[in-house]
Amino acid sequence: DGGITQSPKYLFRKEGQNVTLSCEQNLNHDAMYWYRQDPGQGLRLIYYSQIVNDFQKGDIAEGYSVSREKKESFPLTVTSAQKNPTAFYLCASSKTGGSTDTQYFGPGTRLTVL
Amino acid sequence: GQQVMQIPQYQHVQEGEDFTTYCNSSTTLSNIQWYKQRPGGHPVFLIQLVKSGEVKKQKRLTFQFGEAKKNSSLHITATQTTDVGTYFCAGRGFTGGYQKVTFGTGTKLQVIP
Image (cartoon, rainbow over all chains, first blue to last red; front, top):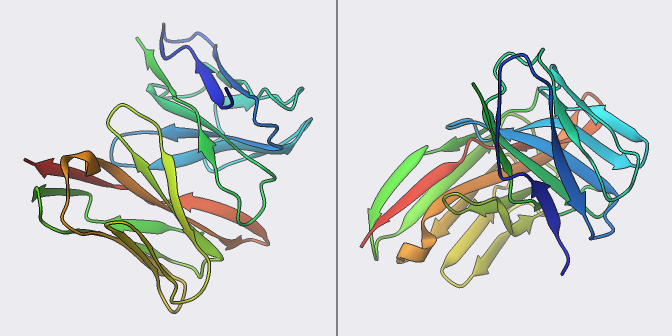
C-alpha cells in the first residue's frame, strides 16, 4: 500500500519545547515538501528537498528545521523560535520536483502549542 | 514575488446550483494545478493545465487556463453534497531565477442539500 504517512495526527506541546513531525513516503519520490496551513491562508511552503542530503528554505522557514538523510523520510522540527507554531502541517512528495510534477499529500499533523 | 489570489474565499450554494472559483497570479505561470481538500482531510490533486487557453473537463468539473497564463478557473455544474470542500489552485512559475509553486488561499465550498 503506497503513500505518505505522517505521525502523529494530533500533537500537543508546551510553549518553549521543540517538536519533530514525522513524514515517510514509500512512493520512491525524489522530492519532498513541508507546508503549513492556517485558516484562510492556504498552504505556505516551509522547506523542500529535491534530493537526499539537500534541502532549501521555502517562504516561511524561520523557526523550523529539516533533514533529508534518507529518500523516504523528511522530518520537520518546529523549534521554540517559531513564534506561532499552532497550525496544521502537511507533508507532500513528488516524483522529481520537476515543473509538471504532481504533489501527493500526507494526512497531516495538527500541532497545538499550549 | 509571486502571489496567487483566489476568490471567493467562501461560497454557499444550494445543491444543483453551479459554482465557480477564480485564481489570479501576479506573474505568468508555467502551469497551474488544482487540488481539493475535504473537511478534515488533505489536498488531493485534481488536474493540471499547461497550455495557454487550455480547457479540461472531468465530469461536472471544467477547468480553464487563461490565454496569458496568469489566471485560471474551476467551474462545477449542478453541485452535489459530495463537492463540499476547499478548492486550491497551485501556480508554478519562475521567481528570482528558480521555479516556485505558490498555492492560492483556497475557496471553501458549502453545498446546502
